[in-house]
Image (cartoon, rainbow, N blue to C red):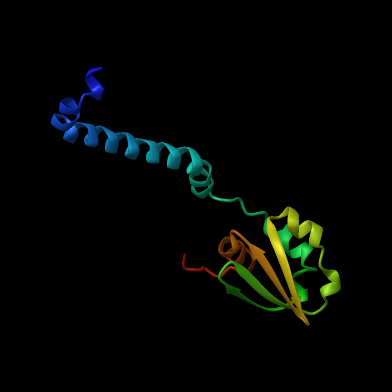
Length: 126
């Protein structure tokens, strides 16, 4: 067979290595594209923010919030009465987690900056 002869392999070694590299780069690109396509498409879609009233009613009303601040993907709230919180309704609005500490409630959300801007009317640098 022509491809297995020693002279053929030695005389065409550069071409064989070049073709192997092109195939390797193509395979890596294909795996990257197929494996991470879903993640890329999720990042491009802007997550929807529920109406302001849904958040406020779930938190017990505007009068239940004493103070607030944004820390990364978390909204830290100091509340008057944590018993007024409707966790199930907050989950429906897109809040993914809760952390409670004495009178503080920390809301974890993917779109925390947008939610914070909506709730408190403060423009947050992105």
